[in-house]
Length: 302
Length: 327
Image (cartoon, rainbow over all chains, first blue to last red; front, side, top):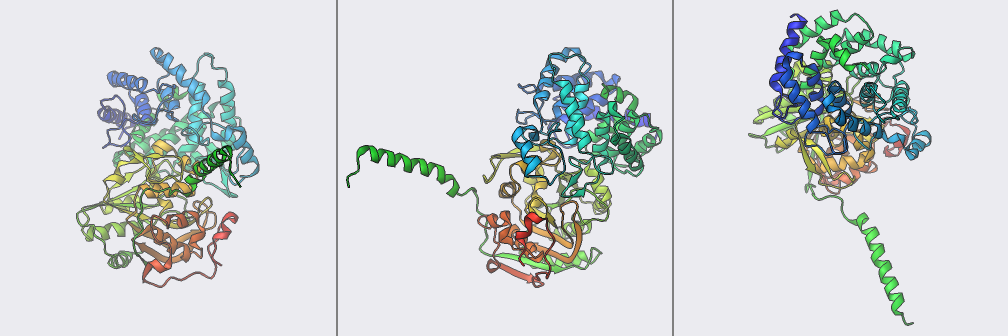
C-alpha cells in the first residue's frame, strides 16, 4: 500500500484511540493515559485532526506535575520522569504553553543521572569499574535517583536544543554539552548504542537499532564526531533487515535526518505495518512520524 | 554498690537507644510466609527443543498436583534481548509446550507476558527470537508487561526501601503464575533463575530500560521484595541450553539437557544452582528467600524424575561470584 494512504489510515486509528483525557494509552485495551504514546501521537496527528490535537495539548498541560516535570502516566507519582523531554518537544510550537514549558525546562536542567554526584562519581571511578563508562560525562535518567541512559539523554538534548532563548536557563548549553559527551562515551565498540554502556565486564554489548537511531537524532549537530558516521553505517546496514515497525520507524527518522535515501525503507515500512496488528500506540505513532519523515524532522529539529 | 538515680537514667536511656537502633535488624523484613511443609522438584532430561518436548513436559507436569481448572495461567519467560547464537532467552518451544500442557490441564486462559529488561522493542525480540510466529500459530496471546496498565502495589517485604512498585494489571488478573527462566549466570546477582526472572514484571514504561531502580535498591534485595509481592505458583526452568560466564547477555552457551519443574520457586532455584555446581546458600537471595518464600534444603525437597547431578566443573562466573561455587 502507498505510504501516504497508510499514513492517513494510521492517523485515523490514532484519533480513534484517543482517550477522554485527551491522551493515549500504551496498549489498545488500556484506559490509562501514558505520556510517551501521547507525545508521539500528538506529533503524528496531521493538521486536519486539529480538535484531537488541541485536546492532546490540553491533556499534556493538565498533567504537568507541580515541580514542572511530567509523569510517565496519569496517576503516576509526582516526582517526574524522562517523559518530560517528550512533552516539551510535543508542546514546542504553542505559545500559550510557554509558562508550562519553562517550568518543564527548569526541571529538566535539575534532573541528572545519579552518577553525576561527587560520591557516586568517585565510586564509579575507583571501586566499581565493571561497566566501562566515564561518570564525569553524565546525562539524564529514566526516573530520579538512577543512572543516565541513552534514550532519556537523547530526548533531553533534543528538547533543550529547541530552546529559542536563554530564558534564564543558562545551564542549558553546559548540560547539552555534557549529554553529548555522555552519548559519545557510551557508544558500542562497533558503533551504535545499547541502552546504556557499550562494554560490561569486558564484553562488548550489541547496539540496538532504536537506541542508536534516537542517539543519532540527538547528535545531528555533531556529525563530525567519528562515532557518528560509524553508527550511521551500522544503522543503515541493519535497517534493511528489521522486521519490527518500532525499530524500523526510528531508523527511517535517523537516516533521513542525515540525508540518506529512505524512500525504499518507507515503502517497506508501509507494507510491513499492513501485516501486523499493532497493539502498541507508541509504535503506531512513530510509524506515522516515519511515513511523514520530512514533517517529523522539522518537529524534532533544533 | 549503690546505683545513683542519674546512673539509672543514663543506663536506661542507653538501653532504649540501643534497642531502637538494633531492633530493625532483627525484625523480619517480610509480611508473608509461603514456605510449604515440603516442596517438590522434578528434573527432566530434555535432549533438545524439538517436538517431543511437549510430551516430556506434559508427563513432567503430571508428577505434580496442579489444579489450573478454569484458571488464568500467566507464563512468564525470560526474554531480555536478541543476540544471534546465544542462549539468552527461554526457548519459545518450551513456552509453547507449557501453554499447550496447561490448556490440556484445563486452564481457561493461558497468556504469555514479559517486559524485556534491556530491549525497548518488544516486537523485535519476539520476532527475532522465534516467539511471534509460534505464539500466533498456537493462538497464545502475549502481553507486553512493560506497557501494560499499572497498579500501585504495596510491597510484601521491605528488603529495599521502595515500599511500593507500580505493577502491571495482567499479573493480578492471573490465578496461576509460572516463572519460566533461562538458567544463566548473572554478573550482578550470581545467577538469574525463577526469582530473578520476576524483574520482568516491573514495567519499563514507569521504571525505564533497564529497570535501574532495582539495581540502585540492591539487586538481591529487590528480588526478595518483588517475589514476596508477586507469588510464583510454579516454575519451569529452561536449562536445555543454559548460559555461563558473563551473563545475562554476554555469557557462553552451556548444554545441560535439563528442564527443572517445581512447585516452589526457592526449591527450583536451589536445585538449578546445584545443577550449575553452586552452593545455593551462598547466593544471597536464595538463602534469604528460604526463610519465607520456600525451601532450599534438600531435606525438605522431594525429588522426582531424574537424579540431581552436580557437574564436575561448575558454571563459570565472574570473579566476584567465585565464592558461590560448591567445589
